[in-house]
Amino acid sequence: MAKTKKKISRQTRSNIITYGIVILAYIIVQTMINSGSISSLMEGLMVPLCIYAILAVSLNLVVGILGELSLGHAGFMCVGAFASAFFSKCMRGEMESDGLRFFLALLIGVAAAALFGLLIGIPVLRLKGDYLAIVTLAFGEIIKNLVNVLYIGKDSGGFHISTQDVMELDADGTMIISGPQGITGTPRDATFLIGIILVLITLFIVINLTNSRSGRAIMSIRDNRIAAESIGINVTKYKLMAFTVSAALAGSAGVLYAHNLSTLTATTNNFGYNQSIMILVFVVLGGIGNIRGSMIAAVILTLLPELLRGLSDYRMLIYAIVLIVMMLFNWAPKAIEWREKYLSFGRKKKEAVK
Image (cartoon, rainbow, N blue to C red; front, side, top):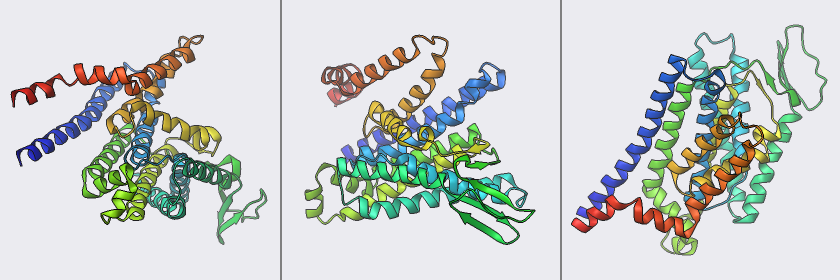
């Protein structure tokens, strides 16, 4: 019983440290912004940092906790971004409160991404390994290409949908989604504070799910699916749960992304294959299954290219070296031995005293 209490208190302490890092980082950065110590370029990176942290933590739920390789995370982000931006543009001028409009847009974006996660997960999660990665990658590309051929306008007659660049609208009609040109005029409601709140909510959901009974069932499926089935765990149910929650959180990152820009377009760099691979890089370098590590890796690898912008000739070389060093530190056997020997001395000392 004492051991159980000790484990619980250690886990709680680790969770408090994770939340504390986020809150402390916000206080320090906000103080520097208020004092003018941060350039406008760096200040503009604060919301994207929150977006990538949310994406990394949410993907770690599937890759690290569930143990499945998904390359369609950018697709769920795209669904959340366009669903919320569509609602915000339609309601702009109709709702007096910007905060309420953004909150409703957030709910719509999360719900749309979760719905797509559920619909995609039902047939796709029967696959595993490379086959699952290929299908989720295809989903992300399909979503991006569908958005690029979609035209939606609104006038007194209601909404009009077309896949061609020709649409007859009344004189008071407006285009909401203009194919490759995307959505223009989205209200820029996203702020650094909102981003930090969403990061904390994401951490709360993922950490509590991981430490819950459902989380232990999900991890048992990752470790040994046959053994999990033999003791009565509903494999399909828990895989769908992890996949849907991860998609919903990616949708919230998409909402934040859409409301940080005045023009939202679906390109390869922001919602395509490259984005999904970049999110996966955050997870792998931060440590598969390590929630705090994936968040920190997302922040470091997003900030690093901008911090090295002055070294234009060597910027990408240094970036590549940092990637290699982080990979070795997390995965090399000797590095793991060194961490266990020198970075866990406090834990070993307590066990020795006991």
